[in-house]
Image 1 (tube, one colour):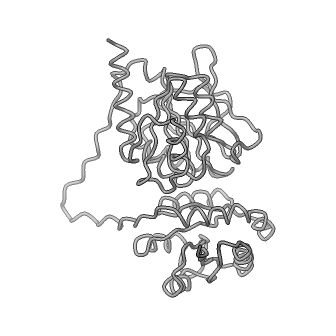
Image 2 (tube, rainbow, N blue to C red; image 1 turned 180 degrees about the vertical axis):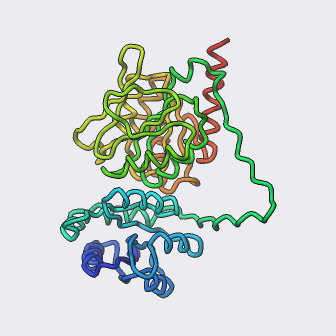
Image 3 (cartoon, rainbow, N blue to C red; image 1 turned 60 degrees about the vertical axis):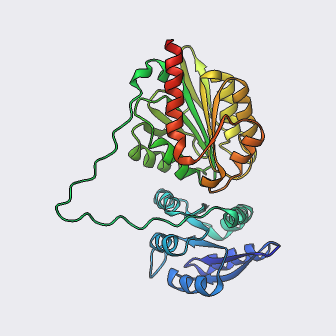
Length: 363
């Protein structure tokens, strides 16, 4: 098999050297170029035709996000961001994922050299995943409206008020990994403000999930937050598993509550979709609805089958719309899927399913 060709883009000579060394130690990849800024990287991409690039954000001559935006419009290719683990770094990284980056590596703010070496396995795993990811050309920025043109009407919000207490009884569970930040957003922004609670495990390191939840909260009609241990799970709210902790649900009298706990990684992940989905099967049973979105590996696939056996109705993202068709493929192979759908159809089908359940409950 040909080796994965990688170009490293970082303004730090030390970081370029360490990343090149880590990549060249792998038998299945090689660093074919290292650029100190995006303008040099642009020429390397043209002449060397890499399979993957790693991209820093803060660089001279052109900001990394600006470069990424242009790259994904003009020559879309797999990009792994190398982001500083700060609050601003988290916000910028989420923007990079929105622009089309496949994944990111969170490098420490201090002790960068040693920190990157400790992340060697994570970095090379993400490069391998990126090399196989489905990459799509980013849309051009919207053109400015002509002077005097009428404003475009916003879509009318869908209401589920007719479901009555069903929104309180049901809980939606979402699991996602690589490519999942945008996929989860695409589902949540299409849900009405009065939908059932949504509980989400997205593979993400500590320091990023709070910014991710805040970003979703600003985009969605439901309220979205990072989950806190012991809080009541309410309709019209979304709860994101904090990075570095497992999220599950428990029953407390007539209420569902969030349980946020430390523990060993499950399927190499913390938070783990497996942990969340097992709690859905055990505690919520037939009142659960499961959604498996894009991601590498098999985390959550077996537990999603347990959910189905407990009465859950499960929707799984199809291969064509996934960035990485790993977790969905494994869920389908495990017999966990009731329906396999393109990403853009999942929210609508979920609403239809809830409405049909509401009708059957009233008959």
